[in-house]
Length: 183
Image (cartoon, rainbow, N blue to C red; front, top):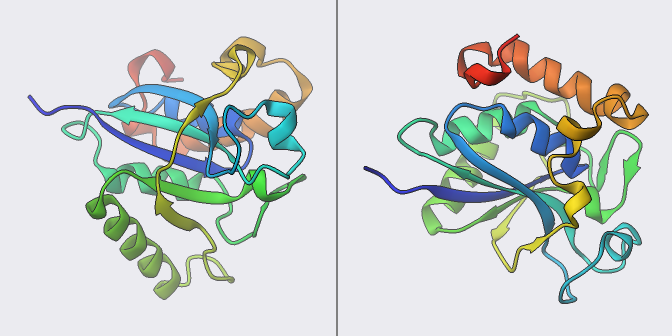
């Protein structure tokens, strides 16, 4: 039996990314948090100030026998706009940057090659600006950020920003959705 694999991803607000990856078959856990900054144990307020250098991220633990790293990347790039620097929709700042924090040289090279393929195929009119860097310390976000969409789906941000991303995922990847989340 293969062991679980981890990757940490930033794609704007972590509530959106968490909700999408929680529904992907083969994903065992998704934790919202912060990575890539300069201070220890940052708070949400500090990260939102844009002064810590951290990105809002999700740490995804998955079974590579069920879902490949390439599948993870496919979902990741389908769930946000990787061509906007430090921005996703109305969320603006370095904390919302598109980022793949890798845990191995293999993850790094696969992610870079994937981005090159997206750019070569002109998937978007603009080039991908997603950073690919080695993972640093992951700081788990405050408890109220965990499982946010599932617990707060009727909250306005969830209804207008998170839900459309989840619905897009459910439609585009219906054959990869966990049974508990199938429409």
